[in-house]
Length: 282
Image (cartoon, rainbow, N blue to C red; front, side, top):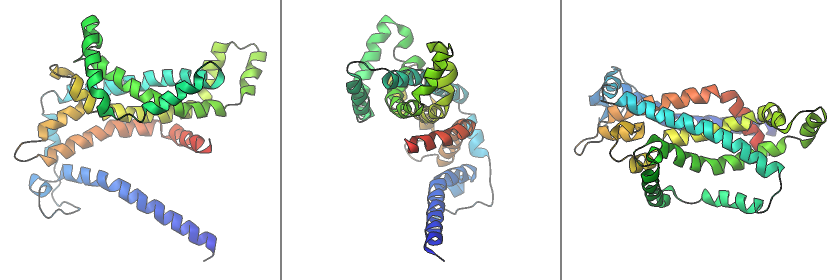
């Protein structure tokens, strides 16, 4: 075996190990969801079950309001994806194609915003939405709009930084050629530039969707009394008991929560792979 074959073998072995380690928590989650209650909380857990059951899933689906919580999370996540994709694309074009004062300062501020812990902003945002709700009740506390706005605010800096590289990678000569052919600025933006950076938007959309879908801190902080506006992560608390947690229910609910993320990932997988490859090239 020559040196190149040894390096290839080592790389493949490392990739397989990483894949196994990454997939193991998902395997254990699904396995625990289909195990009978006696096996889930056994002190001698086994990586298989001889008596799979859907009882935990039936228990989760029977929770009052589970469908409503599921819909709330879906509305928030999809709204954040659509709005962030639009704003991220336009902002990335602005900071890449146009020169204006404080452009570098604004980009640095975007980067610094990513370094601030979410917990440090929870209290100021709580009071901000409380006061905003007195003026415009539709965006105050206990509303889905407050969760959409705060998730949008957190997804934009990272998305703009990521999309900036994709927009910069598109040669300006393509836009200049379109202008010579008589295309307007709007047509160039939506019919030429947008399709070329679509893989980048797919990549940023996945991160936005996952962040909004899994949010617990803001949902628990901003939704105080309107239980009909709770989201799925908050609904998981039903299965945490003071004396003994219902791990079968927790794992079944977590498995159901993973399904929309998996579907979204599969839907954008092709563009996501090319988008990440483009990011690596940049």
